[in-house]
Image (cartoon, rainbow, N blue to C red):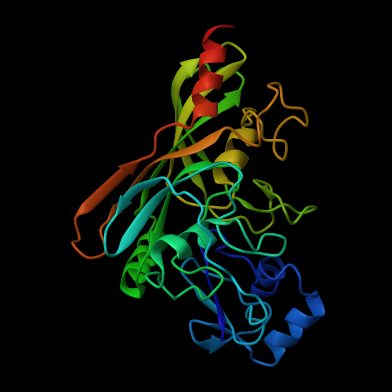
Length: 304
């Protein structure tokens, strides 16, 4: 069985570098051989190693597929914000990985979805990512949409490609703002020295736009809202860090030491998700309430 990947935020990446990250447990030489032997297809056609990906590309690996892995359903509680016959919107908690990957073959959102939905998940992204049309980081909480059938998956993939999905996040960042709102228009690409990080100074960065608004000020910290016009990997984390306001708790793009004990990763929540419903064509908007840790941190900052 083939393994499939839908390109979300990696637009402009070379196919060989993209696969090196998606297939992290495989060697670079193995991946190069897959490409050379035409076992890697993009939109059903073989490509060369220097092919640059576009948002919405369907990448198929006809060999590596997780044939030796048994991804099992797990009875993990899900906070369901919306569900019908085509889609399900989950309020993802912190520390939950979206889909199985090297080092994370159980306890993921996919394991939980397989238990909840049974066979009612889109098969477009293969056995490792059934129903998954987009991702949010392990330590980011909030709204994430999952597709129950291929028609819904194709519709949502197209909306992602067109940047028509409304995505509003809330975050707590370091520093105060003079202005009440602003727009960051700075390209994002792989960090030149660290491939696990993103940067606004990458050689082949892709256009990225984040609109932000200050919701509340706390002296050395600010509570903000960010609306994505594009959806690059780590976009809000990278953009806010680039203007001197890294997210509280983000030890990748911010201070190495978190100023508040007990935080696990960045203080970032995907609050609002708006789509055109794949079946009805009507606009659907779902909101995820702030997680408890976020509310408690806001209360703590208000008392300072």
